[in-house]
Image 1 (cartoon, rainbow, N blue to C red):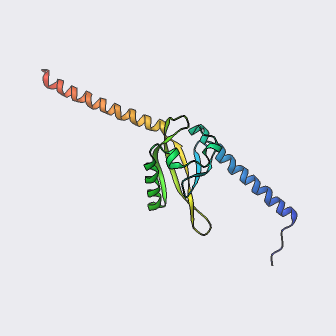
Image 2: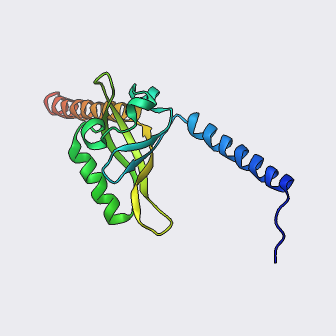
Amino acid sequence: MTEKPTYNELLERIVKLEEDASSYRSLTDNSSDLLYRTDLQGKIIYISRSVYGLSGYTLDEAIGMDMAKEVYLFPQEREKFLMKLQKEGKVNNFEAQLKRKDGSIWWASTNAHFYKNPDGVILGVEGITRDISELKAAQKAQQELIIQLQDAIEKVKTLSGLLPI
């Protein structure tokens, strides 16, 4: 038979657990990425403090929001996300446009998976979302530059055929 832990041993374990919880809380509270959890209906049940900086919503405002109706710019994108999650069991780098509280739009990339209870029953979705708006703007500028360069090359080709060189 194993001995019961002493009061001091239990106290030490509690202090260690509190330190670990504080460390994890600090990690989520100070991340620029958004950590979230939704229930099976797609309602937000947990969200990190970074939600305010990314979307303008406070924690209290974000909790209970419907992802498809209130967060995604195009609700059908949420459906694509869930279909991929069902098929593959996880989603990596899923890009979608999301809505801010002020009505502006931002690009997000999400990694997510189902979270389950100890019996393996799916309870909802949890994931990490990152703002990729600057990346998308740079990609758009790059595409525009490529088009301009292609047009310039075509003009040079046309001129070279007309000029006696």
